[in-house]
Amino acid sequence: MSEPLITPDDFHRLIAEEAPYAAWLGLKAERIGHGTALLRLPFRAEHLRPGGVINGPAIMAVADYCMYALALSIDPRGHGAVTTSMTLNFLRKTTGRDLLAEGKVLRAGRTLAFMETFVYADGETEPVAQVTGNYAFPRAK
Amino acid sequence: MSEPLITPDDFHRLIAEEAPYAAWLGLKAERIGHGTALLRLPFRAEHLRPGGVINGPAIMAVADYCMYALALSIDPRGHGAVTTSMTLNFLRKTTGRDLLAEGKVLRAGRTLAFMETFVYADGETEPVAQVTGNYAFPRAK
Amino acid sequence: MSEPLITPDDFHRLIAEEAPYAAWLGLKAERIGHGTALLRLPFRAEHLRPGGVINGPAIMAVADYCMYALALSIDPRGHGAVTTSMTLNFLRKTTGRDLLAEGKVLRAGRTLAFMETFVYADGETEPVAQVTGNYAFPRAK
Amino acid sequence: MSEPLITPDDFHRLIAEEAPYAAWLGLKAERIGHGTALLRLPFRAEHLRPGGVINGPAIMAVADYCMYALALSIDPRGHGAVTTSMTLNFLRKTTGRDLLAEGKVLRAGRTLAFMETFVYADGETEPVAQVTGNYAFPRAK
Image (cartoon, rainbow over all chains, first blue to last red; front, side, top):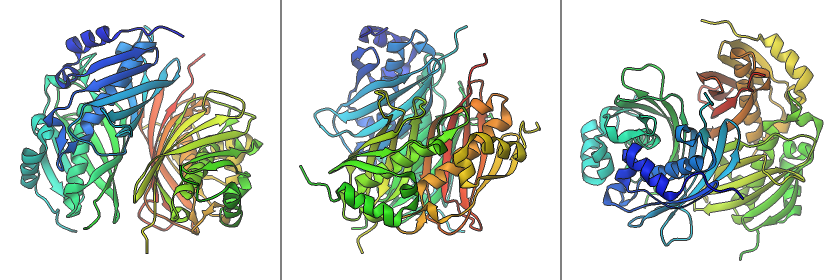
């Protein structure tokens, strides 16, 4: 089993320097393995939508950054990886809780990686959303 | 041709009162028709990701709220409509510009509506992203 | 744990009578539980595409009928369930082998069910495709 | 405006020789432009599913081969292009009619092309399905 190419501390440093939105969200990598990651999005009232439940963009953000951490964990070109497509399936409403995104790489090719992430509300067992994404690595120069 | 059920002013009032994230983003409805909408997301540096381009969550947010405006425009139950699934295809990178989301309803059923939104960088002609979403209306009580 | 509402024999009878395409494909339900199913699509040369690999429609068909079996297994309205959206991620090429679709229900609501299916080539451990689908149940009369 | 790299006759010859499933379906390219295509799937009773409507795999097949024609129309590497992801949104039921898939390329990159196809029942104005796909071109040797 391979070692991840980045640690949670590396990830926090990267988003502090280059991803102000992730920093504003307070995203925290709880665990990064080689092709696996667990990210936490702290609850804040700004994430509520009409009806008082956590909105789609918050769920998307924690899933997207989780998959970015996955790209960084497996490939030295991860820093420049971009999402080419993403599908979100919203399964349950939640509110008032942190979100946890648990992701893994299902396929890592030379050009594209495919990942799946389940988003949970902290303390609940059934997922809030299931998210898949395709990421493209930049070509070697 | 039917009239839209809400105006841009109604939409701005709704997000000011119940959608603090959309308010924080400064989302503005430029035009709402019956089943059509054009929303603007003003550029801000917080939307940049590593590499200096506008990030996925910003693109997702403007598309999601555009489709929420579409749901409100066609159905009196729109306020409680929820996204059941969304697919985003990211087509081009952009930076330093407002985003415009131009959406329309492709199918409105009793329970589900299906919508498509193209996201553009203001002043560019090729879309940044193509987004589709399925929205479920709450059952009448 | 609940019992499935149909058995593999029920499923074979249904497709023999009402789903001639599934019958032509020779689809076989190897196992049906409550919200879980394993279907087999026998290999045939008709499924090859340019390059000599199994084509997308064959992969889609076994996944779609697997998710139809899932709908039948959990809900008495399953017979009339329809796919509202489906996303397929193609992960690896394969050829010359039966396909196995292993699916489960991730969320069963009053109106919609959400399912995930992995498609494998028989004898291989890494999936050929990951497929998700949303199915709508007809309203009770 | 560029010329398409293949004609309908080229496409018919290719599927006759290398795509037996498309040949079995009787797929016919009615029109191929540079990045646009219109394909016809003749109706046959095998495409019906329980409830007597045309099934998902038939809709997927005509959309997938339409997007394959699109790949062939714009890139000399199109023959080896593979679908990496596809999302289908099923909008209306239909039966007893040919299906027409009208597709276009929305983005053509060095590695990936993104396409959108609407599937219609012949003689109807509202689409049966909206389908998007990402296709990867093989690397030049």
